[in-house]
Structure formats: C-alpha cells, structure tokens
Length: 385
Ligand code: SOE
Image (cartoon, rainbow, N blue to C red; front, top):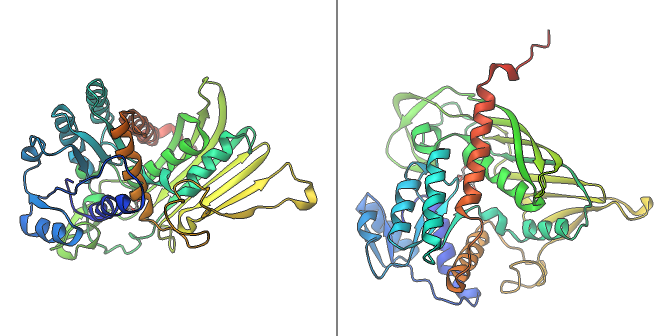
C-alpha cells in the first residue's frame, strides 16, 4: 500500500478484515506500507498490521514477492505510480478520482489495457458502489422496478470547511488534488449515479465557486487534521460545484436529466452522499448517512397504498451481507472497503476484469473536466435584470 492517510487507514482495515469474513480464492498479505516519512510510516504500519515499511515506492514495485499495489496517495501521484506498477506487472487498485487531469487518466487507461493483455488487473476505488444498498438499488433498476428513468438528483454534502480559518490541506491545492469538491466528492456522485442507473452522462453544464479564497497554511500534521500556522495561502480549487447533466442509455438514445451538487459548505451535513432516482414505475432514494437503508416507492401499487418505504438492507440475501451479521445488526462506512478487497482479489484470482475499471475512472475524469470547462464559459451566466 502506497500512502497512509485517511484512505490508508480505511484500506488497511479492508485488507485485514475481508479475508476473516469472506472465503477469498487467495489470501492477501499486508506486506509493505510505503511512506516518505519513515517514522510516521512505521507508526502506521505497526498500528494497521503491515509487515514492513519502505520509503521509495519505485523499489517496492520491482520486488518479485509483491503482486498488488494499492495506491492511496493524493491524486498528483496516481498516474506515475499506477503506470509504473502496471508496467512492472503488478495488479493495481487506485483511489478516486483516478487522476488530476484527463490526459493523466487516458495514460492510465492505456497502461491498464496494455497490462490486461498480460493478465495484469486494475481497478479504481469508488467504494460507495460496494455499500449493499447501492448495489441493491442497481438491481432494482436493472429489474425494471423503476421503469423508464426520468430524472436523477445526486449530491455529496460535507461541511468541514465552514470555518474560514480552517487550515490549508492538500485537498485545497489544485496541483495536489486536481480540483476541490468537484473531484474529491463530486466524482463519487457522478460514479454512483451512473452505477445505479446504468446510464452515462453525455453533456453537462455547471459552475464552480471558491467560497473562502485564502486560508492559513498548515503547521505540523497532515491531511484533514493539520494545525494552522501564521502564513496564509490561496485556495485555487472549488469549494462548491453545481451542475446539470443529460444522460443517455447504452444505445445512445437520450434518457434522463440529472442535477448534481458537491460541497464542503453544507452546514450540518457531515458525509451526506444522497441520490434520488425517479422513474415511470417507481423511485428510490439513498443517503450515505443512513447507509443501511434504501427508500423505495412503487408507483404500480394502488394509489391508496403508495408512499416511500424504508427497506432495511441487512438481509443475508442482500448484496455482500451473508458473511456478516443477522438482519438489523447494521454495517458501517468501513465495510465497503472490505467488499472492495473481496471484489478485487476475486477478479485477480479468477483472471476477470475488476470493476470499475480505469476506463470507467477516465469517463468520470472527462465529466469533471467538462464541468470545469463549462464553468469557465462566461455564457453560462444570464443576467436576470
Ligand atoms: C473528504 O472529502 C473525503 O475523505 C473524500 O476524500 C472521500 O473520497 C469521501 O469518501 C469522504 O470524504
């Protein structure tokens, strides 16, 4: 595993726990944690159960005893590491968004397709596809329970930047993160909307806004938990992204309209990835802050019996649930990372292509890029007066 921030913790938990509950076709070994700061990396490796520590990823991808590279670094290093690892014959799992630019994502897709010809697998880490309720939602849509999909509303709302004096982090710097809310959390909303409906975004129109233009630079500490210093820096990424989209079905026919929001300024919303899908025969609604539940509306019932009902997605027949607990005992945010390990290790062992692929990650990157280009055009604003 290369990196050891918040996603390092989440992925470590997934690698450690998945084999204990799922019958995997191969036993993953948590061999090496890679971090530039040897002392901090050793501390993380001891805490999360990695066998050893390295400070140079280039050395690790050459090792014969390493089969998988799990990339959990900020987006500015995804392309270099993933392409080198794939060319070294290592299977690669890469955190989202795939890259910081479309050009990088295209190079990663190309490297992934070359490597796949030699049986080397790759996947991008959109873990919210692996919450049981979202896969169950996808099944309901695929079975036709919602009929023709007409409209999709997706939002990812957080509020950790509400304090204007909150310090600068790598997520607020374009050269590190590629974009702000748009790529960090908007990417999840885009991927999940397409995963649940099976539709693809063809056109978007949107706007990006930086609410707080400068912040205190980080003192010591990393990631989301750093402390402020006296210096200040410019925030060069979006804090809020709002955009609309036109979806098409696989045959290219126009299919649905969508609206998207990604923000870190939604006071009181801590990690609220919500999606509502409206169809001709029914509707569904999901909220990550209530991730064991799926709201389902069956429009084919008699009008006197209609209404959104809460499905508790914890039955053993629901996706991913069987190896865990009896109905009603609930799963958490962390279980998606175990499910991600299960799907990746199974695909690698069975020599099938893991999903979502780098090509899927490239598509999301193209959506993000289109929103940025759309928001740059002055024409999108029409004065009301
Ligand atoms: C911060 O916005 C963050 O950690 C994102 O980087 C993750 O992708 C998201 O799942 C939770 O919030």
